[in-house]
Image (tube, rainbow, N blue to C red; front, side, top):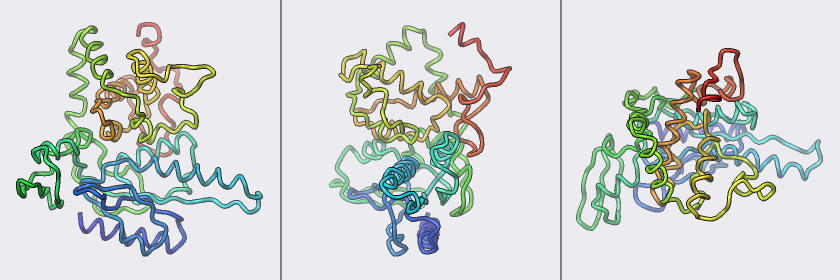
Amino acid sequence: METIQATMREEAARVLAEGRAQVVVGFEEGTLPLTAAPVFITTPEDAQRLVWNPACGQNLAKYVHDQVMAHRESQKRLKPQDRKRKVVAVVAPGCTTRSLAIHLNERQYERDEVVVLGVPCTGAVDRRKLLAAAGAEELAGGAFGNGTVKVETAAGIRELATADLLAESCASCAFNNPVFSDVMLGEPAPSHDAGREFAPVEAVQKLSADERWQGFAAEMAKCMRCNACRNACPSCYCRVCFAEQSQPQWVGIGQSGSDVQVFQFMRLYHMAGRCVDCGTCSAVCPMGVDLRRYLKKLDKDVLDLFGRRAGLSPDEPAVLAEAKEDDPEEFIYSP
């Protein structure tokens, strides 16, 4: 972990010094113990702020898209001959590179507008699991070690196993190493327990239709429409979200049960073939809504129907953006 972090700082400084990118998107130490926050590094000297540890769980591809789009918008005010491109470098484990591939598949920006600093991933900790293991007490300090997390609270210091605290999306991740990169920061990490990737989906599929609906309604009843899931999602980048359109108005903006369910239904289906299972939506939800359970169902459907996974190559068209003569179509007539 420390070796990867040192290499990351070195490569980030080199990319900026050589002018191959104007900004590096990575993580720095958070303001709370055992947290990390996204950071935008623009000078080689500031590359020393970059960190890599099990708190670095957020998918940073979203910020690559935001940086490129904001720069393009600013360039519209300049004369055509004065306009310049902005290249964004990003620290990217497997899920982040898959989201970058989605952006490239969907022609959001060009391949030469992003520099991928690929990093092998051993998984990010689930903050809720960490706090529960700490006895739900406020953290006074802590440190990540080699496969362990040292937690300091008013009750004392405890050492926990990182493997017991991993986010569910990480513990069963089949793509923890970058699917493509410009610079690889270390050797590929061992794969996780990918065999149980679809276990939550298979458990739900055994329930009756009424039981599945009751479970969905109960889960969505927790949602307060704060839009944290949408705002943190790297695949949610529409300039005007359908949920905020008034002409036509697809869904109400309130917190009634039907408004929440329709919003989440439409958003979930919008992710079909585009969700890379980074788990960011569930991690940022303040109400603990388990959106990943439903996104994995769509992931499994796409795999079963088309034999495809989202974002495995920057050169492969999005699964629902191409059609073949032998594509299954039963679901159209017998949903």
